[in-house]
Image 1 (tube, rainbow, N blue to C red):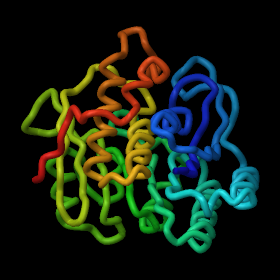
Image 2 (image 1 turned 90 degrees about the horizontal axis):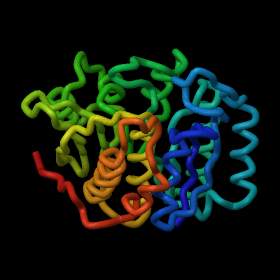
Image 3 (image 1 turned 180 degrees about the vertical axis):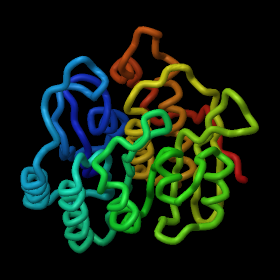
Length: 280
């Protein structure tokens, strides 16, 4: 069981690979983590050190992944925060080569573009690159509701609008989709994760947790990836991932600025599912 994960990396805190690798490794998945950024911490702190890595360096690291024979042993490739259009192009070029070498490789695209409260926070050219290149190449995508709304051309991104778009099976989107953080208009205080698998729409509804740290989407995608690598369906994998994220957030104290992933290691392992999906 091994995964190639191309995402950001921070020294302090848990975003990008610094969040996603925890549930994967907790469940016995070997992770080959390729950084697209090297930062001291996520944005939002008084200081920020490091930078988005240049594309030639990211491309060189990906060549090293090939040289070590890791493409042939990996079952899943994940991309998350890419940092620049050039890094996105390097990742898509690598994906094309990797699929040629290993046609069984599953590609999970977390189209990191933005969020409801922050808007778009990536380079201006990246949303179109996701729409036109990476998302059509993906087997699974894991956007939040805001990102799905941008990809699907929605005017709003509430749970009902997302669900209607998923039912339409929009062109350019893969057949397996997990949309996180959708706000249900009919259920105040709840959060929906909406799933499309084999043409069927599913919903996992959880109570809203007051804690809202950065990196929860990265943690979800990491947990989902681990479960998919373990052979679960998308729906069962999402039930595991939602449970892990919920338990982690519920354990946070008001003074916590980052997710307590080390303290919540048990919650990141596969376990009895707290939240079950319902078919819509």
